[in-house]
Image: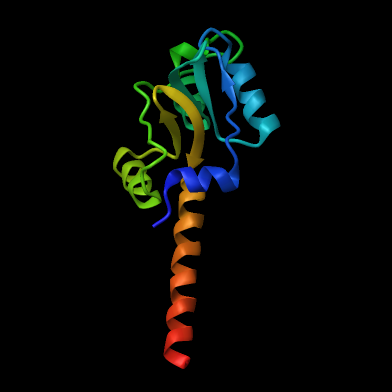
Length: 142
C-alpha cells in the first residue's frame, strides 16, 4: 500500500498559498496562473483555511459579491481537513470521499508539507491496481 508521503515524493511538495486578508480576485488569478483548483490559506506558517474554485462559485458568484471587494477569509473553508504523511492513499481517498473534498493538505507536526488532490489519489490507486494485475498475469502465465 502506498502512503501519502511516497506520493508527495513523486509529485512534489509544492503548495500555493494566499493570506486570509488578501482579496478573492487575487486568489482566483493565482489558481488560474498556477493551474490549480485550490489554495491553502496561510496566516504566517499556520494553515487556517482552504479556498477553492467551488468556494468562489458558491460564496461569491451565487451571492452576488465582488471578488475584488471580498477578502479570502470571508469565503475560505474551515476547519481544514488534513492528512498525515504516513496515512495510506486509500485512507486519504476515504477521508476525501466522506468529507466531500477535492484537495487534502498534508500536515506533519503542525507544519504543512504538501497537498494531494482527488486526482492524485485516484491515479496512485489505479497505478497500484495495474501493477498488481500485471504481477498476477505474470504469475498465471509462468
